[in-house]
Length: 272
Ligand code: NDP
Image (tube, rainbow, N blue to C red):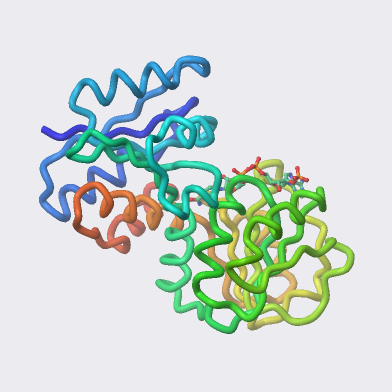
């Protein structure tokens, strides 16, 4: 049977085996999907062994996404721009292709939540790996403007340089952000420390959609803060997680699974 896996360290928290097993049931694809935790300095050897032993494809999570980027023999355009790989596929010709589906997962989840991206003014907070992965797919949706704001301003400027040819992208200091945003995305890891990035509450209007890439059983700190400022629609990153997985599954199996049932089950599991 075709074997797929997620590689990360640590990995026991990963929801990918649950998600892909449900996708396989839903689409009646015959495959197994497991979780693999290589030692930090053993990633390349673990990947090699996996593909020698009937592995057809895998997901890559922290801290190996940049190493997977180096390991891939060919890269998709979006993986090249993202500078990181979260999906590897072994072709029938034996070529290992690296892709990045994080941005597609975000866009899919935003669309599933009926958020309009074309012509929108978007603020993306954070300039780490997750932000870099979503800039290309967001710009492909032709927003009016994409502003990147980050605690370390120079990193926001670097992203702007990388993506400037793809659309109207610029960098902004937290203290200088102004005007009305249709969508504010938090891609920082501040929520993991229970913190909220220091942007002005004035940027949030009732009709501003708020998206926190982090997810948890409770409302995330950023979304809780945005709700307090009056935001009506706040979304967390669980749907992005399912969306990127659906995109990976389609790359491997050529069939796109539905995200809704899996998302509902994951949400239920988080709450119990
Ligand atoms: P990185 O470590 O690459 O980047 C972290 C970013 O957060 C940097 O921009 C950093 O700013 C910023 N940051 C950290 N702490 C604070 C703080 N207290 N205040 C303001 N900014 C802060 O992480 P990733 O980009 O890989 O991941 C970011 C988040 O996205 C994580 O929570 C991760 O779980 C989530 N994620 C969710 C996914 C999903 O499918 N839902 C997929 C991928 C990521 P600075 O540069 O100044 O240090």
